[in-house]
Length: 136
Image (cartoon, rainbow, N blue to C red; front, side, top):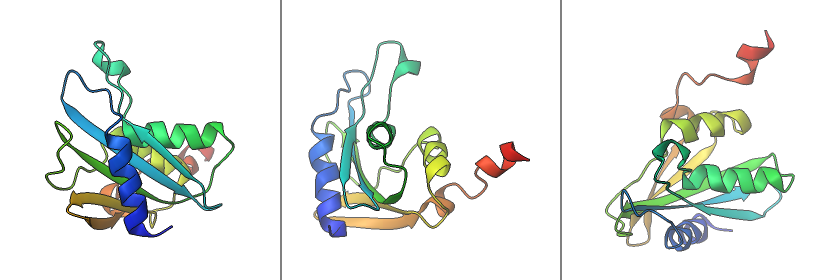
């Protein structure tokens, strides 16, 4: 799967989001090392703390199917479902990624018009709290 195809899958997932409160639709497409793609969308709730982001939806779907090794993720989002630039993962999603991914894990931020910005988990979460901190 190309990076452009993964970004397109994130945009398609974005259209399935349930976001009646913020109006921000977000989609994610997670590519596993085995070549499978798991998509997710954000799902809001009137009790805001129970809202789940698109990135975590995709990761949790993959983990629930036995996947633990991820190659990259694409994230697309925007108010009213309109792509208006990069929509980076929130801090909670970054921390969940750190549970399964190394600092060089590629994150594609869809910017619209078939373009994306590429970054890494380490760039977005430079001082991640990781398993090695708990294992000591």
